Image (tube, rainbow, N blue to C red):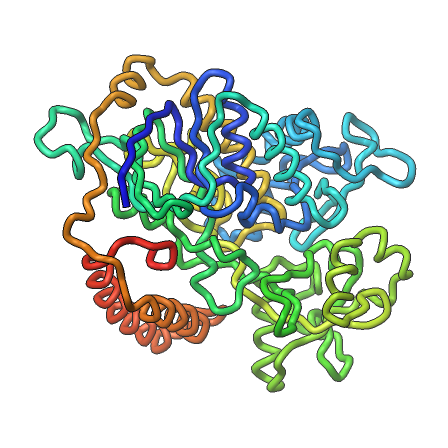
Length: 495
């Protein structure tokens, strides 16, 4: 492995909705490195089905969206942050439309107002229809549109198939210098060439997503391993609310249906949850039924499965006309058919799965972390918006709002500060004391062990005894992995 050094104005680690949005908003004034662990679009944003929550009609209001978010967050949201985010909704949707995102139009008479021609869904926890969407594949429409624009921009350099290894800080990597502690860039593992490169950046932004792949059953893609949160913590940043992992209530139960969730919007359009004996159980748990927030529905399903010894429950929208379901949910209907289920004619088996990291790296309204020069946006950040539970479709909104805020703050940063940071001489990655591993199986076994005990002991419903068992196993794994990391060259799986 050889080490190379590169420099840019802004390094953005993560290329989902947050990272892509930020890159486009900064690139006219700054040189950008956009880092993706796999292919550019391979993050959780791509799989977002429901849409973006925003107040777009006169039947809705900022206060209503605010109250729905606060209630879903179980009293642990920051009300100032919530109001700020929901007030930016219209502007962010307009920006996406201007970029070319083709949201679904309303089939009937238009609503009043600027966005009246667009169809809006309603999802659990929302008092009104306010979810603007692109059929049932909104994340894909947003990511593909923004990716096309990113690839055409001359000042954005895409570094795909690069894993972030660690952040570079003045305190840890330039001991004895007179520079105040700040983030100066990072080390990246170039998977294509098997080498670690050093990137010097005036500003570094973590847009690395959540950590739900730490669970055995999850709706997230393989890249959602919490890297950015861990790197920021190691660099001295605060993290918050990491105990609040949202479990999506309805992932398809099938051995080959890896990470495939059935959108919240199905229940918004009338789908109901039943036991295999046909009993509709959600009204037994909450007066809002299937439109209760995700944490309520997930706990209800978990309770029913444990009480009745079930492997799954059923999600049923077969009482709706087949053409309605095919029109509103073409992707879901097609994917279910691949696994032998016809969503239009019969109920399908579902289970909860780890879905969203509500906590993360503590940031302010400018997306700044505790470490100067380092920002965090999207699911890896803890902004105060979500509290103990995220309201459906607020995640893409948060990505857009804080990408905008981050871009504005970087644009306003003093030029001399950026110049000094971008010219600092950084130490290369040191692998003089390590060798190639001949025991990769150890890493895969540790990974499997972690995901299984997280599911068994740190799941939807937790107890002190289960958490103590998990903590004990984490300590053992930590010692093993630290020893392994200290002796062998980095690989994708090791990271």
